[in-house]
Each structure stands twice: as structure tokens, then as C-alpha cells.
Image (tube, rainbow, N blue to C red):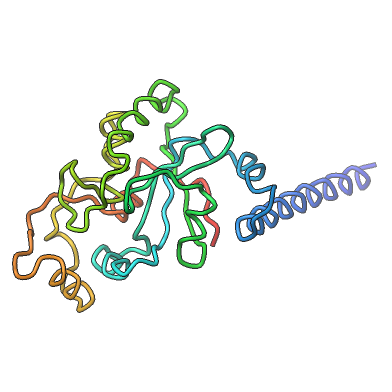
Length: 226
């Protein structure tokens, strides 16, 4: 009798493991392929409005950002579910909503990481999320800020998400830094600084980087594809 029970438990465990292996395989495959199951699988993985998504951009400034911040990640946005579809609200040119699938495809090798507030169930109420969306709406259509200035006239990716959380939920994800805090000695960084600022580099400019937000102890990983 004990052997029969043990056999049933082993088969059940193996079956459960196989089921989730298949689900995750299908999820990864759906991300790379434009299939009707993409949204369905995202819903199964419990992605939520307010989640923060990171990727390695293919932009010409990406490498300089990675080196300066000692991070793999150079672009980010905030996820919203609208009418059953997931979008990323991001600061590119201009600030806009982008379908999640399109956003993922735009990154290097399709890699991305989704993170969430550890206490999101308590903090990100429908009312708070609505305030965050309202905060974000004032930036919609604004130009991308190539000079990383701390103003609302133009805005860059991590600044957008940081301000949405700060002004909409009163949460600071990552500590504000100065440009001088970054690794600016490498050639690829020096070239980009020279291109943007000439000889007048604003070392004391207040900034927030994707790396600083990615490493925040207020966030946990929800999904990482590779």
C-alpha cells in the first residue's frame, strides 16, 4: 500500500512539473512569435498594472549607459493593462504607450525582466494606479530628454517611471544620484558625453538610472526570460 501511495505521489509531482515546464515553454515561444495565445499566457503569469519592465536597448546610447551605470539594462517602462491588453508606458521619442509585445521585440535579443513592488497588493490599489496614470498623462507626447535634465519639459525613461511612482504613489524607487556618481572614464562614455555636452558636462545634475531602479530593494522579480 505504501509503495502504491509513493508511486502516485511521484507521478503527480512529475506531472505537475511537466505541466509547468510546458506552460513556460509556450510562454517563451509566444513572446518570440506573434501568436493569439500571447495575451492569454501573460494573464496566466499574473503580470499586473504598475509592474516595471527592463531591457537592453538597441539605441546608439545604450552601451554608454550600460558602462556608466555598470548594468545590463539601459531602458525601462511601466506596464498597464488596458482593455485586456498589456502596454508599456515609456519615454522614447516621444513619451507614449507601446504594446508589450512590440516593446519586447525592440530590445536586444528579446530579453526583459519584469519587477514589482514587494508590497504591491497593499499599495497599488485601483485608486493609486489611477493617480499614477494621471501623473503619467501629463508627460504624454513630451520629447525624449537626451541631456538627462531633471525637469518636466523633456523626460527620459527612468525619470518617467520614477516620477510616476513618486508623484502618484509617494514611493521613491531608487535613490537620486548625480551624473558624477557614474563611471564616466571609459572611452564609450566619454565620447557620448562629449557629443552631448561638449566641454560643459553638468556633473551635479540630478539623475535616476535604470540600474538604480532595477537594484532597488523595494522590488522583486516577477518574470525573467533569459
